[in-house]
Image (cartoon, rainbow, N blue to C red; front, side, top):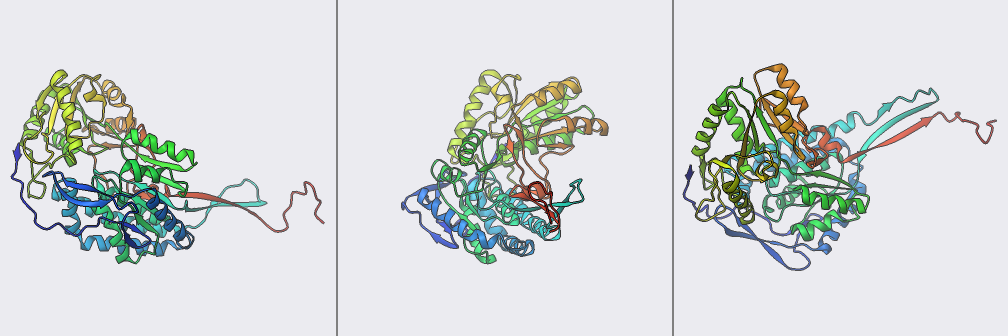
Length: 501
């Protein structure tokens, strides 16, 4: 394992610290701010405004004022704006990538991949927006020749969007592009831990010529600003990505106002590896599912179930490769893993390291890394099915390993989980791959790959991982509802109370 020397990147890329409301940059009403830190050094890099309920009201008002005009736009018009947003982001790829890395701590090459994914989702959502014009009405069977019925898919209205810190811009763009494609106006509240790239969506909106009030961005805390967004009566829907615990509170706030919530929450995914796999490829997919983004992924497959016939050989290779990972300055080339996103997240992972020292067999890692920043070692350990290391979402680079003897046992243990976001199975047997993959209990299951997605593929969970989809057509349609029209000819009557002449 390698910890590189932290280097200075000099002047920060352009960033914003204010709220973006009705196409203008504004200070928060309370004139207070909070610090944003570089997790690789622990140094403060910005002071962002701390929004209050008054600021949320102003943003919601702007979104509601823009709604009547925006809802009448065609899918082609919205697609044009979406493509302009994507082009503006693509032209500033390096600037946004570096800002994301300095704010979040992920390796620069991973940030570049995130920005590329955002650009592609803008393009895909534009295509989906155009579909609204191609099929404005969907005919419905009635079983009665006297009446015709059809449905129209239309935007729900102004929406609130609350996003997390692990994929700051990607999670914001997931919601923003989907809502724009559907025809919604919106208020975005990104995480206060990593707000800098999401706030710059305001600059992209101005560059794309987006009408005033369609996109509004607020800087602030989750407990203050985020709670005010989740409980505001001015929204028709609230979309939240974050922990299952906070998601439950968001859902309660929404349902008090009879506002529909969309929740993309936590996970504790399993990757099940049978004895007929290529070990090198399997180890790569295993590591991809747990060490990417320092394990700070809701769909991370942090439970490894490996068939007992190849367990010794596979685990030995896994431990060997884990110890080779380069951990350090995320702005340097060749770094595999950066720091945890914050001191608080590092402390949380340390708590599980302490538990592992008591009740698990640590095969690799298991320690914090000394020095500036919030670094931890990528970790592989053996533990029991009842251990919190196996059952709880750690949200860090910690992989728990167990063996299984039969397909039935592997499926039982994999599905014995309160979460249901993502799982994976690796096997050379195509029939078993399909049978097992379709039996795994999660919103998305990977067969002979892991956490590999394109923007066309919907993403979302079941169980305590929430409900609703991001990306793909379903990710756009989540911001719509169906209006039903029943029509007959003017001469039609049932003559129930008045006889027609």
